[in-house]
Image (cartoon, rainbow, N blue to C red; front, side):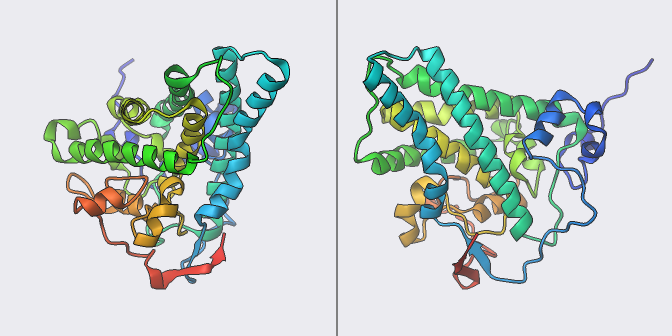
Length: 338
């Protein structure tokens, strides 16, 4: 039997590439079942169509995001403090890692479902274009990338900062700590990301990610291995070495960071600023929002713009900020929250 190579187009995200999702569930691969179970991919519904952009853009501001995310994110700190305070025992690193995986899975699951539902209710940016989807030949790789990111990010936090003999503690300066840490991460990410566009031999490690012009939430993980490794390990490790923060602050940061990372590729037609940095940057018009990274994919290739994902500060400072098309002040309804 002669094997044929998979066509290049079968490995590239494109509209309508996910016909596999309509197969009987028992015929799906493990990765495909996981994508379906998480709600990242849904079967076609002939009675549903995404809403058209007939109204101004709604908002989901920082305080609303904190209200939704903080109780669950804060849970690991509270439960660990109660346990250690009342029993006098410590928590083994493996046990703590397992617990954070459990909490993280709940946070990610809730965030994904919230984002997918918001897109269904409020539609996509650049609504005239169809959104890309993952072809069947790449579902296994995509599932692996999600799994590795899910397992490695909290492991990184534990390896770098967990000390079982220290009582849980947070500084009153936590918001400032998280802001500074995120801006350092974003600075590192900005220059590495920009280099992958501008340095020819680095582009080959990033070009796969840019085969999607209209990404959806799960295509955040669609990348080559070197990019995957740096996204998960590079920026956070370097930032931690430059500006070490305590375990509890680092863990809280990692949960928030993942939620913003998921947000960046949704393409949703909502003014939804990057949570950790935007409270301080939005008064100066330097916040990062969904449309910034959506435009980076839609209109950029080798020559691009909007290289940051956590803010608009570094792109503005270094002259690579791209003008927004839909999320402009006159088209945003601050009285209409999702």
